[in-house]
Length: 459
Image 1 (tube, helix red, strand yellow):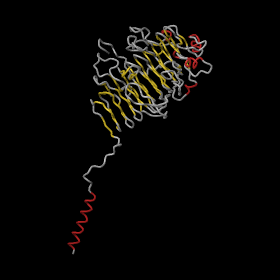
Image 2 (tube, rainbow, N blue to C red; image 1 turned 135 degrees about the vertical axis):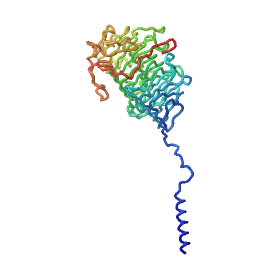
Image 3 (cartoon, rainbow, N blue to C red; image 1 turned 90 degrees about the vertical axis):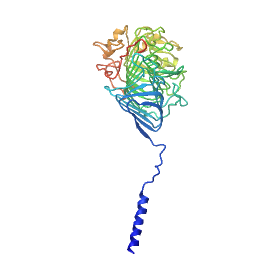
């Protein structure tokens, strides 16, 4: 009897143990689960990333072809990472709506995106560039497709949308055209929201625009456009964000032969409609350094500022010198009226302005009584000083292409004269007494590069 009870007990324990064992079949995989990948030094970044967090540590990496991060994915790039484009399959990095880029460099260890060619063989247009797309408003009736042939839409209704953070990043030798008038720029922002952080970014030798912003509300500080082929800063499609501390410097020997290059080109849209929200960048403390001489056959170095096609604008507390064909150019009736009209919505205040020709000018304006002189009167009535020569700005060494120094020298009118009122009372802006991007501190030190000596076959 005891034996039978003991056997029964043993059987019960065996059954219980069997029921507790893990099945040999694998657990079902959640198709929507996010995976985390960390690259090894020397890895290739390519293809489409879906539901993925990609960590790129310090090291050297290759960007091959058009690389997409879809909604919900992220790329995290560590300080000191160097990402070079594949030479034959030119790279481009596309951050789609709902995805994020966190490129967190430092002044001592910037993140660098550049050509995959050897030094001495690199050229503008060796790769695509970086495109970030967000969900903030544009003035298009439908969600537009970003230019550059990547086939992705942008925009929405989330003005505080967050596409990540870019700090201490250099973008070199970018800019390819997928078709005429549809290019990838150094950094393209489409419908990017104000939750995104863009600070300390340099674009060097871009084959199209350095920074182009289509709609959205993204704010930015400490931007450097160096030796751009087309426009240094291009705004369109209802952009209404704020930017402070920006630099544009031209290479007199380099310009797009087919499209004139400007410090700013700004439109409400491509045809100059009154679509809302109206394009109205709010800008302060920029230093725009033109070529001061045009060494190119096309003679296509153009204006410091080109505001046209029904745009509005605010550009205050800035220094603009050395531009070949114009300083402040207003090129539509609506743009002219927004500045000179009875109820102005645009501002050009407290600036120092020099151009070799057409310091103040109008183009395609049919408003009765509209003249270049009227633009000058309005600007000078708003505490802007028209300089006779570039030397009158008294910047330390602004035209030194390989080692520029944009700080005001002793006695410079740029050391004083700034004012922060109206739109510039927003907490985003840092109040300064100086005009231009610099006072007594060079915030470009350490992380930017101007060491691009041109050789027989490139830079």
